[in-house]
Length: 409
Image (cartoon, rainbow, N blue to C red; front, side, top):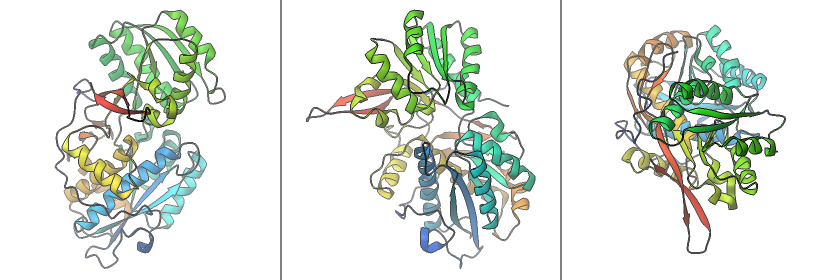
């Protein structure tokens, strides 16, 4: 797979050239019925183009799926309010997969029955891989906002918005080494998860190339992810200066809490899976102080593009602060819009297969000034864009409570 050539060009991305419009403010968007989401108009000159979405909107990974769904719906509403895409109006039909492969495939089949022409999904990697096999057979264009496993875009009909797992591992090792963050690194990762192992394996090899010493690499699995006392003890004994956490925020929060009780004093560094750590820690949010991560989006960034997106998202969804997954979903829709315009598609009655063939080429010819960065795509479906290094800062409020936010490094 082609990896980003700019993975160390950190910093805030340039201001977005895609127009921002006031959102319609609904949070339905799970039906093709315009009355449910307000995003469709059957009288549109070019007809109505159904965008399918798949992700976990219930269950343990629901925070990711709902964020993506909301980001997609916000973009759909903005685009429709501005007249649609080449005379076509968009409508979102989003199905729940509960982060389960079989349910994701069932959701995909439901979307096909509902006349889906483009799939934005799935949200998580394992379901995405399962669905990708089906969309390739049907030659339906698939753009995953956040499925980071390499296999998610193995077929020529599939592209992604997010970084892939190896890319994140490489970028993390390079940033730590080249910015003098640490020389001795420990790792705690989930050996049962394709996201975590994909990042860890590439990080481990790149760390050696960068002169970093991985002094401990401790694994856990989905069946043993509540008690990290053994792993923490090994990290303590290793002499590590930094603990790399290529994992999701739920387990990271437990590790920070248990490490604090064990008296471990160390720097922490992670990837986009740590988005959500601040809220997960709740009253223990102070434990996140100084945690560093590479991510393409942080709602606290002050560039015009991020401010506009965050303001619109909060207005649409009861003042909820968007996480990276929401930004991924939002950018996915604008990427689809740009590709449709590049391909010159003006009639929603086009077959899904013909549309897919047109978009495969168009995706390699567009540049998206997105919320998650300036993005281009190669024919293998991989994006090229710049990650951003962030650090969690803690603010003490007048009432004594503490809140966390991100600051660019």
